[in-house]
Length: 246
Image 1: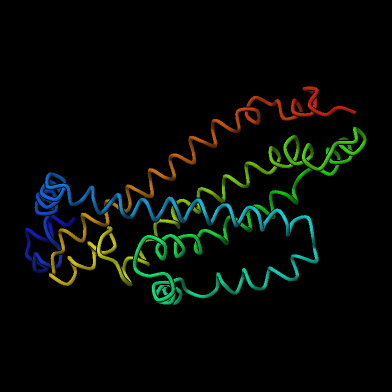
Image 2: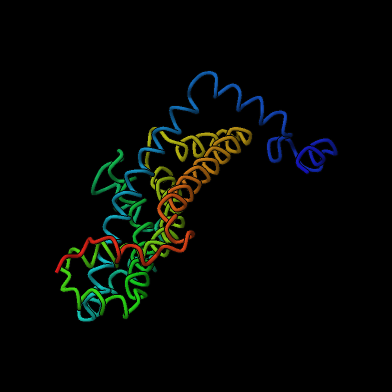
């Protein structure tokens, strides 16, 4: 479509460049190493934000799932944080933490926090009550209940939330780079936009899409490896391996 519009001169090429121009720019920035450099800067912020946001979200989600009182105390703050656009937080984070990796990682973590938190609460509350009663009969400790029953039972929902978080982490990091940065794909888009270099903007956008897709694919692969027991119908095997001792 872009090639047709460019050929027919429906729009100027600086607005909708032909694919061949985008390919030329891609090859150019790939060969000079700038695309890899900016991609790695953004990837660092994405991974740091994803790890921190997921860790905090899972921890808070587990605590809230176990304590209705804590849910009443924390849920309004988590929902309020999510309802505020991340672009509103990004300038403050840059002021508080500087324009380096920290502010970008926190911006990414904030956008990751909510889906991870919600999925953790849902997953933990969907653990079958009959299996919980079985572990009580066997006098399982709190740690045994968590590792033998709760985590395996909630894992499908947790990993579903992690899939969403993996793509949202990219958005959070780029928003932070839009506000203030001297490197990264978000910075590259801002720089190219100021120069009306549309092919370079498209190259950076494609790189971001590929990054999000790779992260999503990695979580999908992790899901397949961790949920082998579910597909093979051996869910109850966790309770039959002698892990719990009376």
